Amino acid sequence: MSAPRTVAFHTLGCKLNFSETSTLARSLEEAGYAKVRQEERPDVFVLNTCSVTENADKECRRHVRRFQTINPEAFIAVVGCYAQLKPEEIASIPGVDLVLGANEKFDLAGHIERRLSPGETADLGRSEAIYSPIKELKHFVPSWNANDRTRTFLKVQDGCDYFCSFCTIPLARGRSRSATISETVAHATTIAASGVKEIVLTGVNTGDFGKGHDQTFLQLIEALDQVEGIERFRISSIEPNLCHDGVIDFVASSQRFAPHFHMPLQSGSDAILERMRRRYDTALYAERVQRIKQRMPHACIGVDVITGTPGETEAEFLKTHAFLRSIAVDYLHVFTYSERANTTAVLRKDEVVPMEVRRERTKQLRILSNKLQRSFYQKHLGTMRNVLFEAEENDGQMLGFTDNYLRVTMPYDPVSVNRIIPIALTSLDGNGHIKGSVPELESANCTIS
Image 1: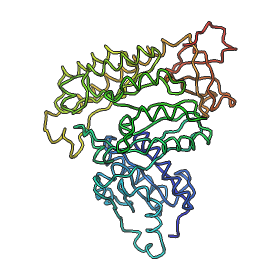
Image 2: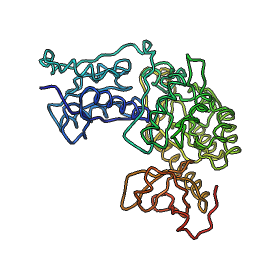
Image 3: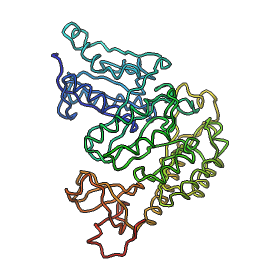
């Protein structure tokens, strides 16, 4: 096989993975590869895996088989969280040529070139796993996606020091770390020069920014607020114990930071939160929600919740359901608990919740989420908000988001793409989106909210 010139990527998991995939793609393009779609039979496939995804092993195997179907001669490399946790298992999957751990993945181009150099091609049938103990991972590699002119996910932090009982992220990504504020601002300035209007700040534990630099997340967002060219910043997720008054008050006063907070809760039972080793209780969480809504009544608050963790009784689940109904949150991301090797939740050997019970609880919370989101959307009908429209056209319609995360649809207009425009919010459509129209064409009496 001659040295490859084309590469395709597939990403599983979170926004952080997508930002890192984009960085890996740029590094390969700089090394002379052309990025193509998967169906174009590339010479190299790169799979960026996730350890949080349920059935990670099955997902990995399924995509490798698919790559082989598209091009049986392709070189297949696997990176990401699951690659750090189970490198040898992945290397044993038929068709996988290279597995790189967290400390090695950002030299993906070098490792592929080495394997495909003239002196190494005879060993192409041999799979290779290269990884280091996660405790050796100490450097931070900045990443951002560059394939969307409207919105970019900028990684500002990586790793986590929390070691929650259900989570493998510290085992897959290492300790909390970040770049300095000045370095992060420089990356944001580079992104602004590309024409992007919105930057979403991502990380494993974003609010923990600044470890090792004696800097804070609040100082970071204050500095980013001064970056010219970016019209909107959004915080992707922040732990409630790190979402302190200073952060909330700054977002409330900022013209650029979106009034949108995604705060993981995981459970509305204090007993479960303690077993999870979370660093807050329901009282603190409720107080944070109240503070946000007092300062920004129009703000959107999203919540992560896990159902069926070991030992979760029906009464504890009902506490979660009741707690979510009692606080002013607006949508839920609901995850069904699945066992992760080497986590405290597995080692504790608490009573296992049957999978059918877990899934039923997930279903109930997703129904609640739909009700919460619809109520939040209805509260904004008859008002006007600024919307950033995306380029994709679907059945003659275009979609965009308000600053407070309302999804708005309007007849497609190429002039409106990648622009923030005041839009009248008129009604809900069959997909649960808000129908919008430009104010000049709207006869309804809408008010600015």
